Length: 109
Image (cartoon, rainbow, N blue to C red; front, side):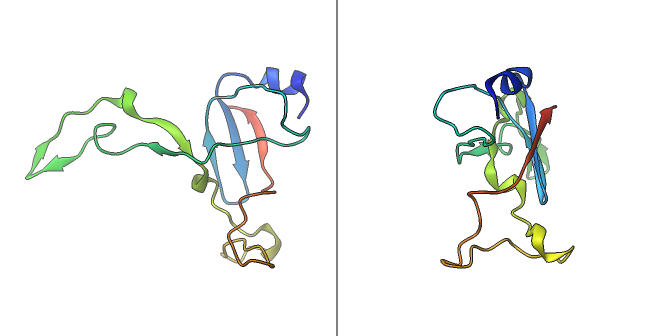
């Protein structure tokens, strides 16, 4: 996307694919092809300590500020070419799940 478009989305943009969406932090930088976004393949942190869990019926300490990062898998990898059939989008040559070239819409969250 253009740097002016990217700048308009700074803050917490939402990326939505045919299979899901995520909200993250945007950084504008050179080296990313126009019309593309790059997402680091981190796993985020949303569990122990970030949301309430019970052990032996007792609530463990939580701090919602620990819930950070995004997980690329949240975008779902649904195959948009399968006309509504639930199926993972698989790259035909290697048989691997499509992680490059996944179509997304980017908008202000």
